[in-house]
Image 1 (cartoon, rainbow, N blue to C red):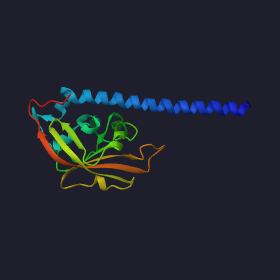
Image 2: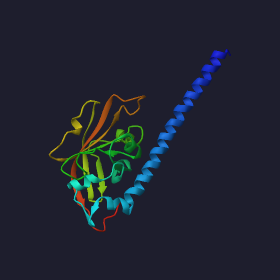
Image 3: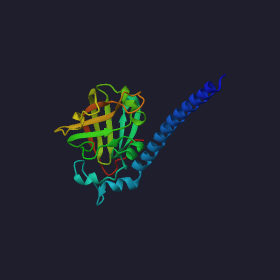
Image 4: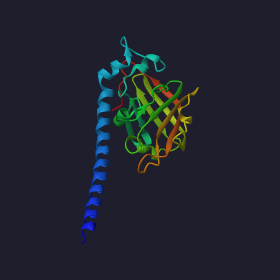
Length: 210
């Protein structure tokens, strides 16, 4: 075999191996980050971060916006998909490596307004490709449990900010890049729209569901 073909073969093998191990690193890194986020959310120290003078602060309180960036403060589950994710505060690259991130300035889960949660399509939010209209989404925080129903799905351009706009109703928008399988920066966004259907207020003995 000519030297050039041998060199090209080794180059392709090396490139393929690089992509494989990079993907493996992202996969296991996301799993580890979620395990750490789960421990953080369930710990007493996390609960103290969203309590004041020993009392749970109501969902609409501005004081709850003092949750530190990157801190896990909510448990999001989609029962039909048997999926559980831990949501962190913030949407910068560091935050999103830990898990889906709550957009700063948007409504908190259970509050009146638009609660926006974003995540990476190739790790935590890949499961959104299997979401259907009518699915239930449950979000638990120290303030209580909030039950949303998926009202629609949409694919929009990266510059479309309609899903970020304030709302007079308690709604939830989950956002990730689209297409789900795409090399490089994805040109579109996949949005899951949901409306609050019910809630369960927290009490002193409220504990996360195992």
